[in-house]
Length: 76
Image (tube, rainbow, N blue to C red; front, side, top):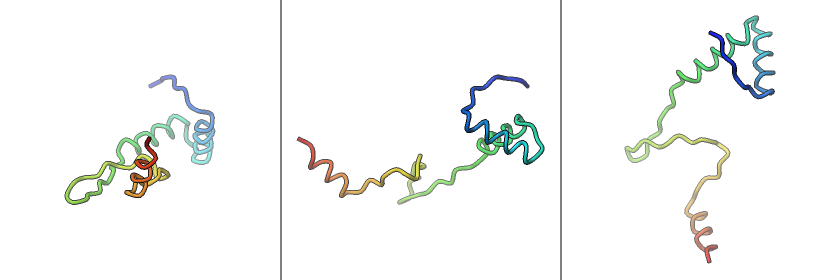
């Protein structure tokens, strides 16, 4: 099936590199990567029997009581 997509240049370069290394078309590589993402199961973590929401980024700052208190104290 044919379609048109706007792909960022760095992503397209990576797709082309993978397709060249593996001897497959760019479409085959993209389809495989999308399938892997769609079928990947996210493991839920539980705290006190309640499932936690997955983190969007490992680089985000952890919210602690110290941070909450500091931000509260900065309010006018």
